Amino acid sequence: MKIAFMGAGSTVFVRNIIGDCLLTDCLKESEFALYDIDKTRLEESKTILDIMNKSLGGTAKITTYLGVENRKDALRNSDFVINAIQVGGYDPCTITDFEIPKKYGLRQTIGDTLGIGGIMRALRTIPVVEDFCNDMNEVCPNAMFLNYVNPMAMITGYVQRYAFENTVGLCHSVQTCAQSILNGVGMGEFADERKELIAGINHQAWLLKIEDKLGNDLYPEIRRRVHQRLIDDKDFDDQVRNIYIERFGYYCTESSEHNAEYNPYFIKSNYPELIERHNIPLDEYPRRCISQIERWKTEYNELKNGSTKEINRSNEYASRIMEAVVTNTPYKIGGNVLNTNHLISNFPEEACVEVPCLIDGVGIHPTYIGALPTACAALNMTNINCQLMTIEAARSHKKNDVYLAAMLDPHTSAELDIDTIVKMCDELIDAHSDYLPDFS
Image 1 (cartoon, rainbow, N blue to C red):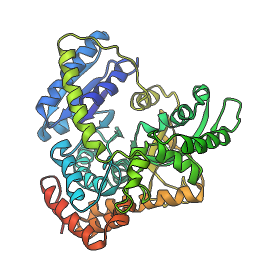
Image 2 (cartoon, rainbow, N blue to C red):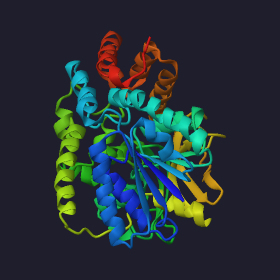
Image 3 (cartoon, rainbow, N blue to C red):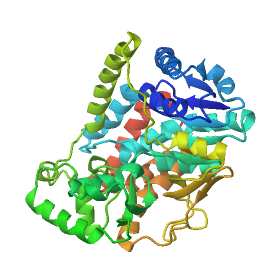
């Protein structure tokens, strides 16, 4: 088989995903085609993967493809394509996404999923991914496309609607959601044999049910402990999601630093005390990027100079999806798919939803959920509105559609007036002009 990895310069990520494949019997003899536009990062990934491959028996074939002119060859005859690109990188694009909005009084924590940062990230990423899909339709039309790139719902939703149907979006947060809240409230003994149902949208999917192995509902005790913790412990760093339990009734998948910017409740210039009260880490993603870059430099030099690192299969979905398809052995994931036939009945069909999906030799089989609790669906819809409008802007290349996407974002619209939103969007479009199509 052939597995193409787009954005293979994402060294830590490519190491984890392909490391998982090298530990999987039906995948370990595959060709892994690494593609990137950054020569140095591509060579670093190749070096590390060669070391890993050799330590595990050397059964894989690892090839590299540098630059757009070699992209079709990287994709040609692939069975699976994994997408992990970051268009524009930390410098300059992530810096721009944070610094320009800050001038207008708009603060962010992560800026990769929703908000003005998520909108701009989508607008510069979708054209590149669409080019990938055009190539895939030509040289590997039967491949499965596994998207790991944020903003997940915007990119995956665009691709599934307009570019490459056999696509699923993947995130880490579903796997860790239930265990996170159980550990957080001191009920970790239930983590290993729990039963759960998670559905909604990426980074804001709801833990709708959580039971012990006998089917006893754990939520009443979780809610009791959360209520007490919010009273007693002002220093813990998962307050936003715990407040969701207190007010909306349910826990959600992604971290509190993410969810702090997906709504109008927590980052408010007129209420600066909320930042300290709820431990909200403003400008978290730029700090994280700097830390990750430095950590990778150290780790790369250690590995290159002979340091050994134990290789264990992670809980990432990619290798398990490919294994399920190849062996026709069913496996359940939390996947991002179109809401076709109203999998979640109180969302529009155009929405990209995160629901349980069964994977087997035939492909991806999403689960029908029905209606979410009214309040949870309503909060999701404030995000979906922005996602769908951003997809429309990516299609139309009209500035006014970008303005509308920002106006529909719950955090941006709560902080800025319309004229300021327009001015900020214009400045961002100009600053990102090297990475965007022309907007009229």
